[in-house]
Length: 173
Image 1 (cartoon, rainbow, N blue to C red):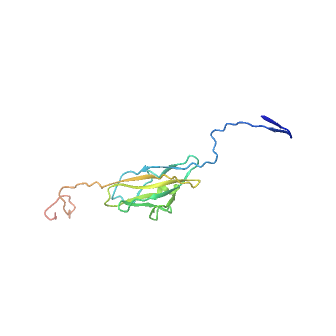
Image 2: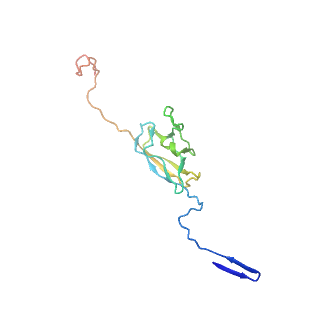
Image 3: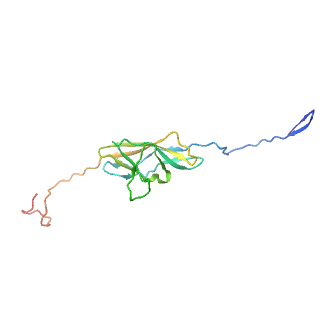
């Protein structure tokens, strides 16, 4: 300690040094959004769940509670949809840019590829943590869309009117 004496009296001052490590002093750490890709799907699939590769994010000082969809793919590539009521008996609804969805229901996202689109459909999203802080650097989610596999069929086709599996003179080709 240190003591100081003045002409008017004595004042005792004690100081101590303490090393502080691994302590949080209320400095909020922002969440981090992680880029992801869905499994490839043909453009004839219709509504296809993205649950196999969900939206993802981390938060060093909390938990991810929501995701904000920053951008959506153009309709010419397909429509991103969400089961907003978690009811399988009702169809999913289109997601709009800026829409926030809960992390607990993000696995209900589906993508309906446009029937003529082939390529990578993308949208961006940002993680939101339990302190309502949003990642300022959204990540990209990629949905690879392919043309359907066309199987060639060859041979002779006829109306097997008598069910004999053999073409006879009375059955039309």
